[in-house]
Amino acid sequence: MPENNETQSLAVVAGEVLKRMVLAVQEYSLLSLRSLANVVTPPQYWGDTLEQMDLIGVGSLPIIVAASLSIGAVLVLNTASQFQRFGMTSLTGDAVALALVRELGPTITALLVAGRNASGMASELGSMVVTEQVDAMRALGTDPIRKLMTPRVVATILVLPLLVAVADFVGLVGGFVVAHFTLRLGAVQFWTRAVKALEFGDLVQGMVKPLVFAFIVATVGCFQGLRVRGGTQGVGRATTSAVVISSVMVLVSDLFLAKLLLYIFQK
Image 1 (cartoon, rainbow, N blue to C red):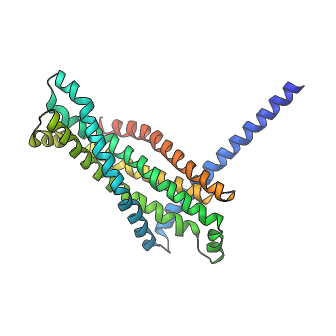
Image 2 (image 1 turned 90 degrees about the horizontal axis):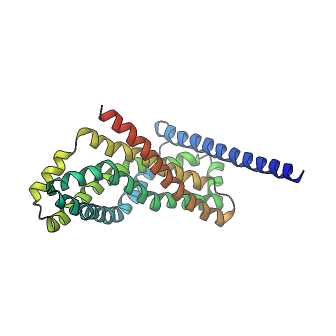
Image 3 (image 1 turned 90 degrees about the vertical axis):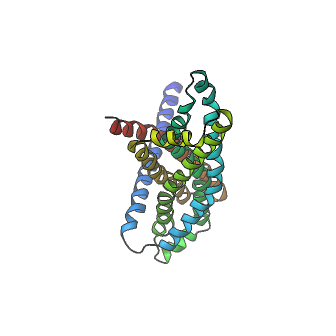
């Protein structure tokens, strides 16, 4: 009998956990769709969107530049010995360009933005929920999703591709600097190979992924902030969850996007 009771209790607990997960996914999906639908219906808070673009884009620029410069340099350092072994140092520009534009640029930029801005969105909106500012907005007839979430989602979608473009260029610059001093590659040789290595499909991959990643980062951050429960401790949990969930979703979605885009452009 005790074993049967324990089995039943475990089944009940597992069922409750599954229900909460399904409910969370449902709430997240509905909230995300509402945030996009608000773009085409009035009122629209473009002033808030521009402010968020400044906070997300300009605010993230220093860390994007520093990280991308290091990534480009590390790519060359790790591949230099292999290229020298086979006498193919001229392919350095190809390798750096393809790696940055296809994968590392969009993914690393999205993860950095998630760490900086998804956490910020979750903590900011969570604090507003805890201090009942969101309830006050509803009482005054203002839709908090339209006022708080939609500008952040739109701003992230508009800004992240630009940050990725900056990251790609800065990464190539870092790769060129290291290639010049370690492999003695000239500027013309490196940049000509880097540009010629990129095809239209590579550029599409590099620009489509940031759009999806931006949507994930912004919606997860806002969703975690708006569903805060339990006071200031809940804000801390929501901030951590926003970073972890958005980062994992970015990496998982990158797998499926890479497979889909490679299938489309390599046919």
